[in-house]
Image (cartoon, rainbow, N blue to C red):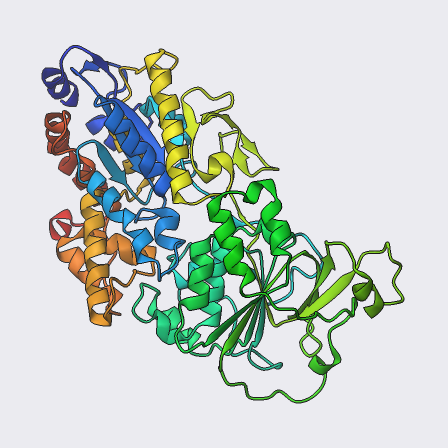
Length: 592
């Protein structure tokens, strides 16, 4: 039945539907196992895996440069934009305005959004290559790098990403947006008053602003209410931002540093920087441009000389004695420290399973004055200092994760590639942080994404990569979605999620309040009666889960050259749904 209908519609170019084996009832209704059909002017189907800025820039560039290309963007979450949504600080809405450009792109007929599908786990990479002419991985870097030093297992030692995920509402089950990774009110040793942030990039400064400021500052941002409520208990008085190299290697931008010095009114945050020789720094070749000069001149205005404890083996005695005192919030001091390499996390004297301090090795030349403080050390021996604290956040960089079937460099934490072409894998490409490492800002990401997209266009033009007649993109995968009971989310369904988030934000006086759970997103995405019940669930009203197969109709194109083909296929989908539902004892009439 499908063969006759598809063949009568399609033209002269050969085309083959997905041949993934499914159950006998499903296969007899919808698969085209061996015969080929045809279509005229079929577009080149390209898949982009990952919907952060890099993936969206790749799709935008490809579709603008070649009108014969159609891109499907896959994302493991029901919502797009990766670090743009879940990594950018809540008080930086101007950066998140880029989301609107990508939302408009999803509304065109050139790019299809497919959420809640994890390529490499939900769908094998080899199967993607049977459905698409090319597959581009833009999966970013989603885990913290480790320092691999003693004591890293102690309580209250965390990667900065875990804290960022918390206050940016990275949804469960992938994150835990309802619970802060550490207890700000503390334990037997009292509330957390001193924190160490290891690393001095932009993410580190975002974390510092959250730790150092009043919870009231975040109430009008898109920080989730659960985080704001827990930040009421924040009593941190000192935050030490530590870099292992000199000030000339600071990774933050001038905008981030300036914001830290000004964003809280009434001088509630005091910023201090270790003393350094400004003239000597500005003489370095890499600091000759105007931007670097302005940065270090600004940083130098906040220099101050304060000494660390130089007892290399233990914490100051003051932390080991006395009763736990009640601590008021008060102003917060932020100290930028340099030339200190962390070598050990020390246990707290009252709670041995928790961190109580960090031992650092001084990486700059030892002065006679420093040597005099620890006269028993040999002048050539390493020089150590200790910083007491009750919390450590490591912001030393992000690492990409390997995907099954894709060559990966486990030392550099990137996919093996040359100019975005994945090594030894024809038709596989990569862009963004999984290509070059977790460095740079969004402007760098755009240039990198365009470079990868251009490699694809060059390979198509030079016939290194050729379009195959049986590469139908998402249409080649419909019966696989059915077999595996997957829940693909379309742009229409995505709009329902955003609508609910915006409505929640209106109630709270902010732009939007993110939905904290994937399950709730999926149910809201359904729309209709089930979607309304799902909205009630977000408001603590329980309801039934929808069937995965009901999402399939929203993947069908309405405005592209495949529109008629979509309508023909959809005529038989309800029959397929009924068979599948009946086998599970579900009344489809009630669900639809």
